[in-house]
Image (cartoon, rainbow, N blue to C red):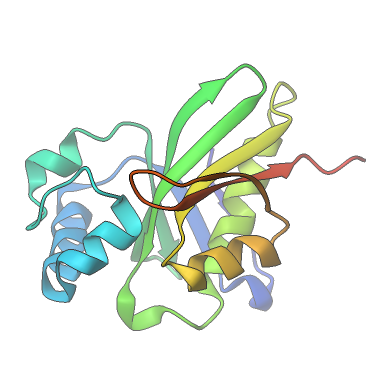
Amino acid sequence: MTKQTDNPSMHHITIQPGLSDRDRATLIGWTNRKGANFLRQWAGPTPHFPLTPEQVDDWSDLYTIFRQGRFVGIIQEIRREQDNVHIGHFVLDPALTGRGIGRAALLIFMDILFRDDAIRSITLNVFDYNLAARKLYERVGFVVLRTIESPEKKYTMIKHKPTP
């Protein structure tokens, strides 16, 4: 399930299943340097700050994002429900945000998921306060499916498989 593109607009992104111990340590370092709000922004309310290796090890179906061979982030396939995949735990190296790398990685990951003929849609949740993420998801074609008001306002967004 690895895909790489040589299109410069896609930033030479590769996505691979799994997360090495070294990359896990790098992820934890980014998160713990940025603080509790950063962790909550990309991982939701469940993991407790500071992020620990044990917390990361509890997450299944993680995918590692590389840019030109260098670890730059993760994304998770949280669950499959009939013809839908729900994704989450999407985070990039904070030093690289705002450069289109997240958009490129998300497009590639969606392409990987949509190659499965059984998958017709992808969903995700985004908190109301995470406006940058919501804008990113909208730019790649996600729309708000529903708003959840409690315990915190968040949106479930959906992207349907493009028709051939």
